[in-house]
Image (cartoon, rainbow over all chains, first blue to last red; front, side, top):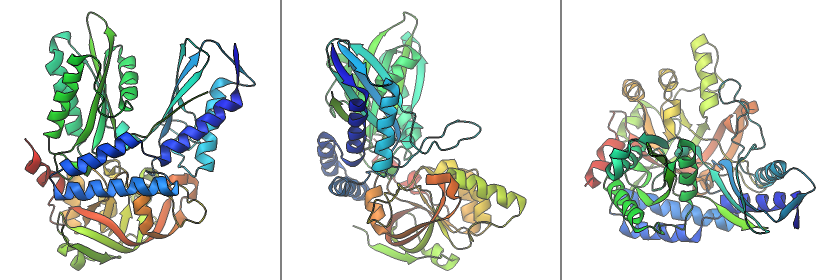
Length: 281
Length: 184
């Protein structure tokens, strides 16, 4: 057994949330540069230049890329050989979020009760935590500060198996079309297919942060990603929704076995920043 | 690239009717930051006929809640939030003399009709460029509803704040006219 202290978890979570909010991932930055070359619209080019300049300022000065520093989403893989000591696991993660948002001058955007009080918790907690037990003696973290401009444009459908490939393409493209300028295009589209209604959305969310445009390992799903991306970019929405041929930077699909009667399709829309950071203890 | 038009706040009808959809604008002067919770409160006050925390006549509201300012900075990162959530409240504010809004995303038909009637303009700022936009904010202060934290009402003094006219006072809408040119 390997011992891990809760304070180590707190420190790592804090470090990762600061990193995710200040630094755009290099593969995404390269994709934005390429988008600037590919974009035909003058307004679209102007918007992409602003986005690139913004990301450069954020990393240089260590200030948030976006004022919506997000709801703190954390995916954890805990090795089964790890023994957690000195405190509560969930609290250790929330403490890391609290420290990052306080000390990093990040915006606190969480309200306690979604309907009636909507009172700000002032700490940006609680975090949304997904935990998986895996072999090994490490703890791996993936953090995603998820902004709600794009989260609000996400959607799920329980399609009929007969709807098949076409049904999936139509639903994803329609979701992006309806969202228009709202989710800060050019977007990254995470798609989760199969599983249950809840699990489909979780894998869609995680698919967002795959290395940009790295195709699905299954060639059939890779072809589906390509087809959807082409159809999305043919919508003409463009950067900031002000017209252009780059509406999405990538479509990432993940899939799971599902029930004989079902075809769940989840679309998690993400803005052009797709903020995330990974680390391990 | 198109020439950038410089404007100063407050706005009046004479200035507004010159602004056309697709114009690149640099705004200088005071603008007011307010989002969901502050709109809800202002809307309630208007309904009750009570005094508002800000005089809306001729002003611009920026749908935004900044990050806290780092030491040595005038303002934290600040960019537009999605505007449609303010739509239910907006026509009442336009009736009270609000002349401009800065946000991102679609507006409802009711808002656009009210903008035409009251001669107002809707600007887009580029979502997700909050570190860049913050450079144009020279002064930032909370002037009402401090208890709302990031959702308080802010007064920002801005110089050359970058924006694009999306819906002009005649109701022309860039979100409707520009994307079809690139549709395949």
